Image 1 (cartoon, helix red, strand yellow):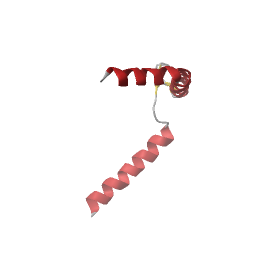
Image 2 (cartoon, one colour):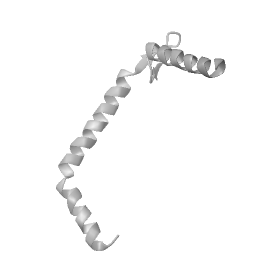
Image 3 (tube, helix red, strand yellow):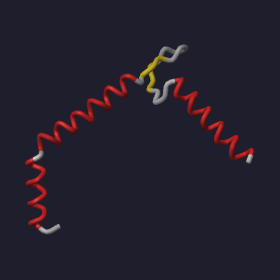
Amino acid sequence: MPEERRAYWRGRLLERRQILYVVGCGALTFGIVYYVTHISETPVTHRRRYLAFTKEQFMKLAEFLYNVVMLILCS
């Protein structure tokens, strides 16, 4: 990239530094909260683990996939 454009973009980033920090911190906070709220404990070993889907969401997804497969196979 030419030096003029590099200086232009560097200046734009420095002008918006606070906005970028706020957006970055907000995304990091959201990620941490999402991760912590999806940790569950296994019933037998009592270990904590991350689950992306709840049991209800997983059952809805399984039912949807079942219907799709049945439509493909039965037609």
